[in-house]
Length: 296
Image 1 (cartoon, rainbow, N blue to C red):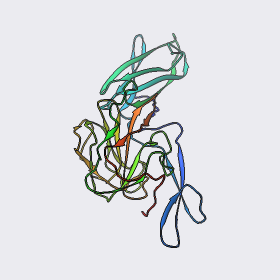
Image 2 (cartoon, rainbow, N blue to C red):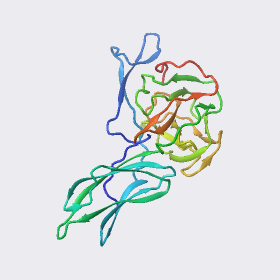
Image 3 (cartoon, rainbow, N blue to C red):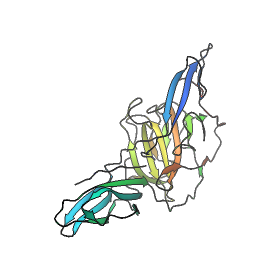
Image 4 (cartoon, helix red, strand yellow):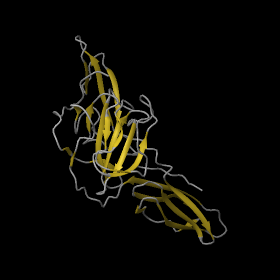
């Protein structure tokens, strides 16, 4: 049976979510402004550096009992490698508990017998397995830094760039770029890759800061992620292979979004954490302000 698990990821859940506070106000001319400086009468917005991918049902621990004890098996049902870390907490009446957590890179759609625990004779064993994981192989190295524009249409305006105080402050989104565009704009794959995960069912703010999204895994181990997509517009599914320019979805205004836009980020696994990495578009768009200015 499946046992208690606790996952980390980028996509992904972290033990300490980083948050930034932004203030929204409208001046006497009716101009809506977002700023990180507190303004009297402004509405406070809190954005977290989090992306909930709901993959806990795809990376998990099972236990197999046999004459020699109980073997803990880690399973990966994702179409991407995951770095895993398995530890045993609160062990009682059992031997074979490792002194340190066990780490492994588990290939896509695979499983591994990682640990066997032996109950003490005549006693009832108890323990809690704890699993941490991050999508991606930490041994991979990026080979591409320039990306074609991942949309059709425009020209559009960049509303927040790398390090923007509005919401690009944490490790998962520090190098992301937000591009304001009308809802329904075609979103295209920026590179060839394998679809790892999608969300296509959120409306409005939903229960995920990322809104609807598509995550692609590239041959060099990096991942591109396309966020805040229009509900029901995602045209790909996990396991699909796509080429540069393949239609993925349409832009939307879902999740923690103050207006219709595409949030595009490139990530990789670095030390059990999926974090954003620097990249640039192959052609200019516009200047990169620190935070968005505009209405909803």
